Image 1 (tube, rainbow, N blue to C red):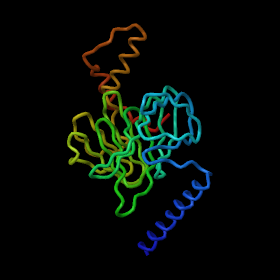
Image 2 (image 1 turned 45 degrees about the vertical axis):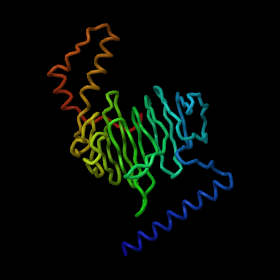
Image 3 (image 1 turned 60 degrees about the vertical axis):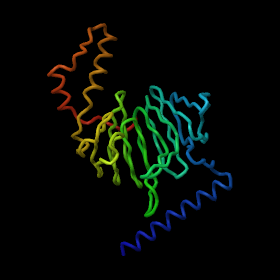
Image 4 (image 1 turned 120 degrees about the vertical axis):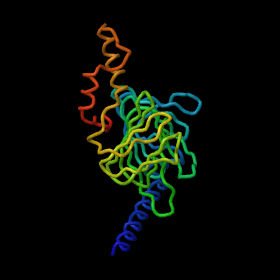
Length: 249
């Protein structure tokens, strides 16, 4: 019965994909080139550069080619769809490079460099390579799932899984990975291996990022900036604080 359900699911998915291809060929929806993306929605300030550094004007249904760099400013958000149907919602203060690179574990279609991202990856079936998402410190491998990624200014990557299974490895030791189930998270620092999976609601904020934010606020207010690290009280407060919302705001 389970095999029959899986077979029916596969047939339905193929029908949906075929229907989408027919619509695209009929000119109803734009055709996304391999390694590129379609702009589904956009709000606030979003800047896009082509491979030569030239600015690209954006609107809904704009097509972006491989090698395009996407930057969002304060209040800026953009929803993109890749050629395989996967979708990405970039939050404010984020940066992403569209790329296509074949690796031993699958194919990476984007390099997420900074900020917050919500990803909904189209299901991969048996025999299909995993979808690989790269960050400065991690490689995230999935076969179809919904998850969140946050990369801070220190290159630390946090991955929170909402649905499906996600494998996370560090750049320096890709053979040492962790497997995340729904409701679990991990973090990977530069030149480090992933932390053990932790329930998402128990993940502490990155203290270095907190310290930088406190320093910026003190500079704006004209107060001295303590560069020797957070006080014991602030460290204890950080340990007790709850996991911040990683979905794009």
